[in-house]
Image 1: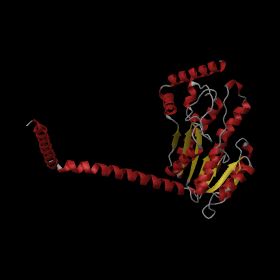
Image 2 (image 1 turned 60 degrees about the vertical axis):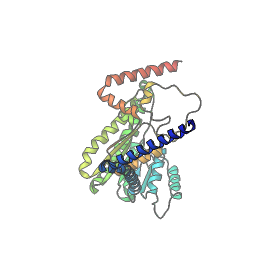
Image 3 (image 1 turned 90 degrees about the vertical axis):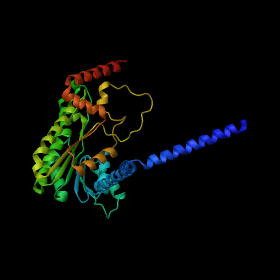
Image 4 (image 1 turned 90 degrees about the horizontal axis):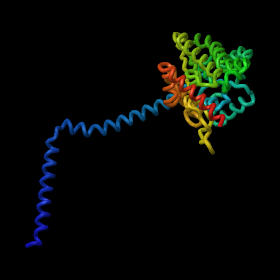
Length: 343
């Protein structure tokens, strides 16, 4: 009867489906046991590896927080955004801080703030030293005060710096000297002043916070870039000289440190081509990010760290391997900036 045809087709489909499933089961049972074991182990290995990486990161983070406990740490320009962030991190980590700056009143305020936000049973009161790289005559006295605070020091973080942006023909010789004092002679003099103490103890870590312009010069920053190149070369040479005494020397070169990464409001300002060589974000890297990198560098004793996006890093390599191309791009950037100002 015609009504029975659909039922027959349905029965035939069910029988075929059953036979196919039976064949699949048999095929699975006949598969190589080694292959089956591999398939089952892969997810387990992935999960285990991820867990190990997480555990490793947690342990490194814990060690970083305790790596400065009881150590004497000197921070220059502790009143800057990065200086305050480093002061807070190291103070909570149990370091014996020596905070340096130009204003005694502001240093006292910083020390009070640190004590209010920490456990006095796990931290040490900060010691304060007036230090002004712009006044080189006061440097011997400042170095003596730093060494007298605890009789020695373990870490010196050279953070201070003075910026300048102007056409070279408009910069006076007095300004050239002031920039060099702040960015080169000051850090170099302080490092030389504390080295005998570190050499006698055969331990210590000198960490220079430098600009990427110590490696890559851009237009309208002649004196600033020259001072950063000079201090970079000084600590590169010093690293090799003090290696035999167990003293570490690290340099951290960044694009720009900002107190905020808030977005610009209104129309975006015109930017020249070469401005992208030294900018990382709209307002640079935050003090928190930089302080985290400083702690990591002190912990793993890396000799050189570059905090910059891909383009500035590529420009640094281009300076060595394709200098003419880089110089042409720089010149085009200056022309573009001049044209924009005339509009």
